[in-house]
Length: 564
Ligand SMILES: *[C@@H]1O[C@H](CO)[C@@H](O)[C@H](O)[C@H]1NC(C)=O
Ligand SMILES: *[C@@H]1O[C@H](CO)[C@@H](O)[C@H](O)[C@H]1NC(C)=O
Ligand SMILES: *[C@@H]1O[C@H](CO)[C@@H](O)[C@H](O)[C@H]1NC(C)=O
Ligand SMILES: *[C@@H]1O[C@H](CO)[C@@H](O)[C@H](O)[C@H]1NC(C)=O
Image (cartoon, rainbow, N blue to C red; front, side, top):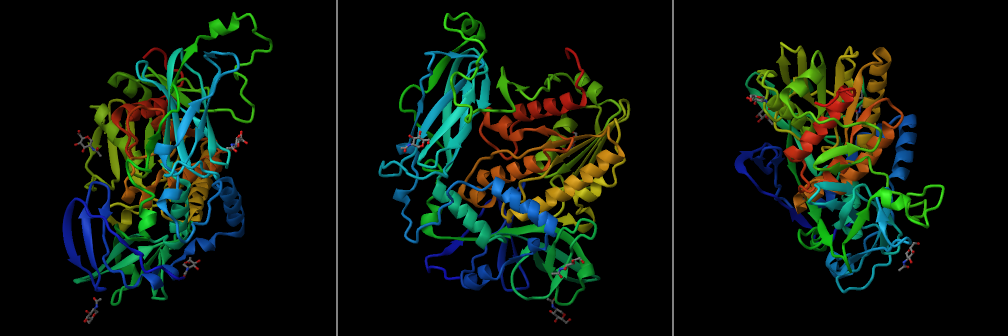
C-alpha cells in the first residue's frame, strides 16, 4: 500500500521512564503508569512494509461465527463512513463552534412529565458551511443541576448534516440540553481506517526464560511478516494468540505477558481531527434557549384539549423515540427497565445483601474498580494477600462472619496490563466453566476496553465464547445470577482516542448488547450512567457513579430489600 511521505510516527510519553535495549535493535521506552505501559517507537523507516503485512488471525472464525459476525457488522455499520479525500482539509470537516442545536417547539405549547423533547442539531464546517452528510458522533444529555437529575438522549442521524436528539421528560422543573461532538464524521473515518490498516498499533510482549537464558518477543493477535511464531491459541475456546518465536528458547519457555507499547502512523491533517477544545468532545452551542420547563403530568391530564387515549409522546413521530435504561434523580440512578434500584447507604445494608454470597468478578480494570469499591466499603471484608500486583490481580477477599467471598480475575489477552504471569492469564469462558454456580453465586463480567484497536471480529469471538460459557453455567445452575457491565465513555486525548476512542467503545457496546440479548443476564448500563451524570467522562468513573453502579448490582442480588 502506498503511504504519503508525510506519514510520521505519533509518539506519546508520560510517567516514569525506564529504558531497555531490546534484542531487535529497537529502542523502546517503557513507561510505567497506573494503567498503561506506554511506548514510543521512534523508527519511521520500516513503516510501509510493516503496515501492509499485518495479518489478523480472526479470519479463523468458524463459518457459523463468521455469519454472526457479519450480521453484527451490519448492525453497527456507521452511517456514511466516507472514504477520506486524498487532500482532506480540516476546514471542510465538522466544527462544533459553527454548529448549533435548537430545542424544537412542542405542538401543545408546553412540556409535561412523561412526554418527550426533540432537539434539532445542525452541523457546519469551519467555514460555517452546513454539512450535507452525516456520520458525526454526537452525545446528548438532558439535565437539571439543582435536582441532580440527568438522562442520556438518543441521537438520530438524518444523513444530511442534521441530527435529532430525543429525550424523555422524567422530572418536573427545568431541563437543560447539552450536545457534545465526540468526533467529526471525518475523524470516525480515520478511526475505522486505523483498525483496518494498523490493528497492531497496540502491541504486547512476552518474556521467555530457561535457566539463565531469557529473551523477549512481540506478541499479538495481529502479527506481521513470515517470522516463525509460537501459537498460543487456546485449545478449549479457540481464542488465537501468537508471539514471535524466541531465537534460542522454545515456545514453552514463555513466563509472562505485558503490554509493550503503542505506535501509529497518521497524516498531520488526520491528527488535527482530534483536538481537545476544537473538535474532540466539545459542546455544541444552542441557537436559542437550551432549556425548557417541564410541568407535572397532573397539569397534563387536566388540560381542556386532553384527548383519549393518553398520549405521552408529545406528538413525536413514533420512529424517533428515546428509550433510556434509566436516569438520575437527586443523584440516585433510577432504572426504567422495571428494576427497582435500592440505595445501599450503610455497611450493614451492603453486607446483609451479600451475606452468604460468592461474587466472582471477571474482566478489565473497570470491573477491578468494583472489587476495590466493595473491598473499601466493607471493613469486615478482608483481602487475602495473593501477592498479585494491584493492577492485574487476581484478588480474593473474605468476610467470615457474613460468609461473603469476593474474587477478581482479569480477562486474558489482549489485556493491556503490566507484567502478568502466564499462569494468571485466563480466558473468562474457561473460568466460568469452573464455577459451580447456584442461588448464592453471582458472576460479574466486564470486558470491553482492551479490544478497541482490533477488528471487531476479535471482540465478537471473545463474547461468543463467553456467551457459550454463560449458557453452560446457566444450564448447570439456573439460579446463578450473571451481571454484565457495559462499556462507558472516557476522557479523550489524541492518544486515548487512537487507542480507545468512545467510538470504538460504542461499537463494541452495541455488539455486547446484541450478543447477550437473549441470554438471562442483567446489564449494568455503565454507558448511560456515565453520559447522564454531571461528572466528567472517565475510563474509571468517579465514586458517585460507581456507588450507583454498585447499587444496581446489589439491587439485582437483593431485589426485595425494603427501606435500607
Ligand atoms: C435532513 O433530513 C431531515 C429528515 O429527513 C429533514 O427533516 C431535514 O429537512 C433535512 N435537512 C436538510 C437541510 O436537508
Ligand atoms: C494455531 O493453533 C491452532 C490450534 O491448534 C490451530 O487451529 C491454528 O491453525 C494454528 N495457527 C497457526 C497460524 O499456526
Ligand atoms: C542465542 O544464543 C547464542 C549462543 O549462545 C547467543 O550468541 C545469542 O546472543 C543468543 N540470542 C539471543 C537472542 O538471545
Ligand atoms: C483492599 O483493602 C485493603 C485495606 O484497605 C487494602 O490494603 C488493599 O490494597 C485493597 N485491595 C484492593 C485490591 O483494592
